[in-house]
Length: 540
Image (tube, rainbow, N blue to C red; front, side, top):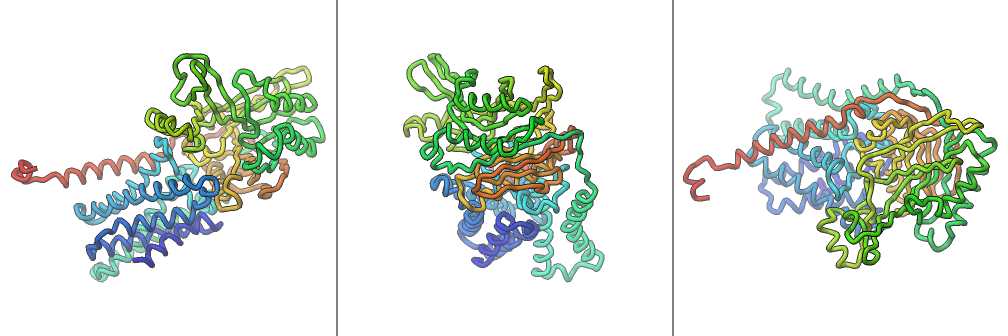
């Protein structure tokens, strides 16, 4: 059983750690299923600790790097995420005592995917890093059909293949395979082969036939300034940081052709809403744009709104003094030489470092602890920013909607389709992944942007403070990428596309169907548990 635990953790960790090995997830769950089968057949006591230990090991191997940013947060992420996985597996293990045949395994797969969808859509304490469909983020040539299903289609694929392999293995082990006729055996093997290879073949066909849509193009210049976030506010002043970024742009701006300048998440701080022009960074960028009037700049900023009121203006407002409150935001800002300034507030926030979840409850605890958790607030509804081009007379020539994904938001597939439904013709991702150091974390985060490109069929320009900055095309291929932990500037063109994929139009059908199946089977399980003997009912 210990060997099976280790084998499961290794097989399921490799897709997140090594490029091009996502296919291992297609049989990586088999050791865990074998572990449960042994425990069920032998009546293993305290089986909970075996599968919980397996999930802890998997989570720790793949996401240990969170501890580089926050030790407590990293440990909590590993233990809490593993706990939720283990609860799902425990319910499955228990259901095998009441349900027969394939039903418990269908219950397990549907329940797992329903939980992943809950992470994506509803949970405020959300850590969907190890959603099974993300196993192919570094093997994108296998999942071009995500434009139809989204990432949870990959999760379903993983469960189908693993359960198919395990089903044949258990039939062989129990001797029931020998009792099947040739047609039944052939059907089982053929079905498994189709489940395993058909999505790969379909993806290959889609990949080879897909032609990049280009209704028009936008020239984009990515500035990767490479500031150590742990020393950002002590080693360099904001004025010095502004100068470094603008020097990067100057090295590539040889003419006055229209260009979108891209800067990383939280590049500056201290921007007060509705009083942008008072911020030193805003003034520095505005002065720079006077010499490059055809340029727009999109940058990240920590922004604040102040309120004079007796009552808190929102659940996320923090009290400065009586009658004076502040709301903080992690924002993306777009501006041009006319001083036009648009803003978008990041909505998918990192628990603890940006967000106090379930604020009606946790705010009170946070206040007692002296305010250790951040209380950023995001927008209730997605909006897009606009890259604008004007002629010499100042008349508007082009007004192109841009989806500005901020950091952690790039993990959420269905959420990111909201930018497309709002009209975005290409996407940007601004982020700061340096908190984790030179670990697998920033590589995994980068790879998730490739999945978003496939699901939406949009070009992506990605700007990281220390990397990985890159241009990604509509097939999820990396066209150009910069180095890690080096200042650099990347120039490229992104194609504009106004078409919507099936996934954008219809959302996460796989997740919704699996949630429905899970609820049906849960209700059925509850009815099975209800005692049918009247005397037993009375005694209860």
